[in-house]
Image 1 (cartoon, rainbow, N blue to C red):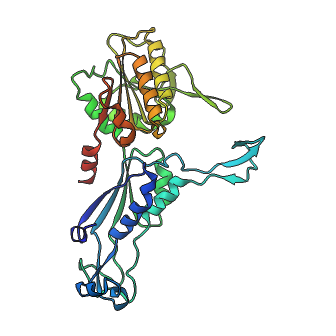
Image 2 (image 1 turned 45 degrees about the vertical axis):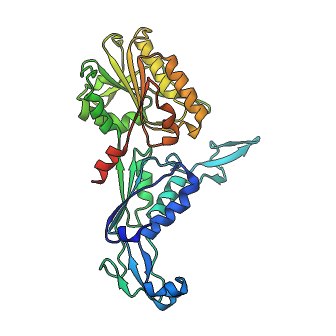
Image 3 (image 1 turned 30 degrees about the vertical axis):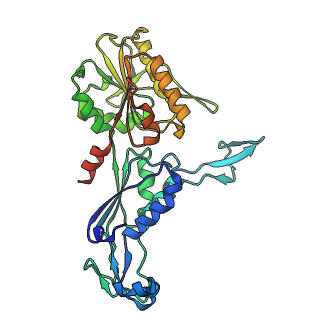
Length: 355
């Protein structure tokens, strides 16, 4: 890195968690930005071998570091279950299970939030930014997560390390853009549907604030569990005055527009299951306008999964459109040129969050 462009300046570090082979290199660079030795020029004659023992170096550092994580790969690994091996299969329904998950989401956050190193002894001869060396001043460190699946556990995991944690949601930003489209039908014919109650609880308030929809226009689907199998109850629900209600009327297939929202998807099956349920509530109409938005297209990081997702999207007809961000370029690059898919550049959003 060009140290002359780092000393005393605010740094925005776009951190990639998709390509795991680059994790250590990025982590090392993050440590370096918090404090680094700049050898005195006279040490070039020894090929920079003696500056540490002679204390012949200056100490440089950034003035502030914001680490931006557009996608946090271990986001679902935030808790620990007890596991047990039964008949050759791992199960987590045994109260006496003696095996535990490693909550990688928490420990990776701690690695990211770890304070920078101290100057090697006997110490530097000067501070390049004029900030104290004793006690050692370190630049403020901020971790900015975009649409993190489980926010609270990750934030709490680094509470002792002095880093600032910011959780920014893209969904409200998308809603504003969606509302501004010429084809936006207005509050009487606009519905938001969440594929499970967890997504509803995260975003319902943002929907009310941005789109000004009535509560019976903000819907969710209940998950069903039979053993290890997870399905969707074939009913739509909404909450009003803290009371759960089932949607009893049908959609108007020629006027209504339903926007399905979630934070990320792997196979898309839950989202496409929601589309089929919408069509059922529209009397089986294939003409009803449906849009799907997910902040992150994970697709198991597999091109075949992306191809399968596109195939399912096309089977639902041209009235169904798919929106996502380019937080995971390796998957979203495969959607380019698809008439039913729109990839939103997340860079403007990040720039706004960092300005």
